[in-house]
Length: 189
Image (cartoon, rainbow, N blue to C red; front, side):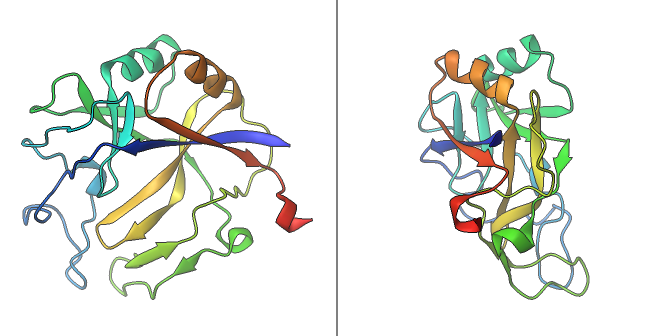
């Protein structure tokens, strides 16, 4: 049974931080991982491929004004839009509502966690998405509690309710790459 959808976007051919993450961000003293990555917006970031939903190579979800208007029209709360000064009409998007990812069921691979911040340098195995809760999610936008990727290029999975997904897909927005999240997959039967 379909319980929700994930929301990915095409690559926008850009890096938020093409050289390195700035030194002034809060970091773990042990392994140099950025601790507040979702608020790390570069004032110089210029989007190269303009889509309504897209990801930078370093894992930032970028959305258009059109996507922001959709979210506001649908009265979806607990999300953030951080303006991109060098790319007007585009935003770094984050969701605040957290859903637990079932890392055991999905067999996610975590590198050894840091003793100070408890983050793993590498987390592999985001797809297909396995959630701990298996009830149908009708509306809203959420994020996984687990972030996937490596070092400072980790990002949560964005999860959208079935009704929200249906309306979003009908809107004709560009760049969306979305997959069904099931309560049970064929490989589990």
